[in-house]
Length: 439
Image (tube, rainbow, N blue to C red; front, side, top):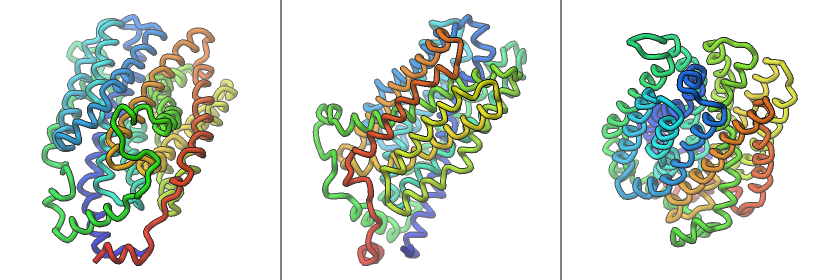
């Protein structure tokens, strides 16, 4: 379907204004929550963290994230994205800097919990925010473009974090302390930039013309489904809704995958005898592969309007990749190739899944529903991060520690095929309807 001139202009302006900044924020979001994977190469010995204690501390981030996520998304609706995103970024950046003061297991636990509380609501807030600005035919692609920052945060961020380790001793700080200081300060600065870059809604966008605002408002209104799997209901009922919990279980496999790899993948690669810096460089490879290839799957989902299989297939691929890692033996090449498959599949999952979820949830339940799905799936991910540490401590094998994700992703892939089967495909508007909107 050919796009009108006003559609191209409106979507182009919105994308140039919002997406690069959101990507930069998400880049630091993922960098600041996973940089402990590289910092741990020095930090764990310095402050006396066992594998189990490290895993527990890593998981406490997600506990706090879960507790504060729904309130945060509801607060964003009340205060607006511009102010609330600024608050989130400033506070989490400050906590990351404070991570340099970690002195033992207790302070590590406290600061990781505070980081989760500060960052809660950022990702689901952005997913909700994108529904204010983009029609259906763009959503999987825009979520994926935004999510490329996730892969880039490790592709670029892992060597970046490793380079901070080389500053060991500068100004009396250890290298792992420079990891937190060097990556927390930019986040605080980005938080203040939110006040100048973000706009709450299209209606208040001074950088759109009156005609462009009108087109976007009418287009979004015309695409609202009249029947949702999860319609309007009180918050208490929403949080008990079976479809919401089904979506949580679907998302939990992907969330557990990226959380576990962010915390444990550097240690897995380190077992091949790599140096600290070499580990950081090789750790970036799976994320680089994902950032290069992840867009193709979302473009396919948006072009066809198909969501369920585009969500399920990547989860099955993640499961197969983890099975392969378990049997890769002592081959670094095979392990990196399989981890690249896992990360590419995870990255490909996100766009179709969140586009699918926005079709299942009604507009009145989207803010709380998206936050509940993301928050609860991250809580399950916290359990998986801790489980990896426990299994590694019991078996001596980090690869074996990844096996719980096989079952979780397989279950999620099967489950998504049965959720809202009537909502799995949302065709593009017919040409006459688009013409009416474009007038």
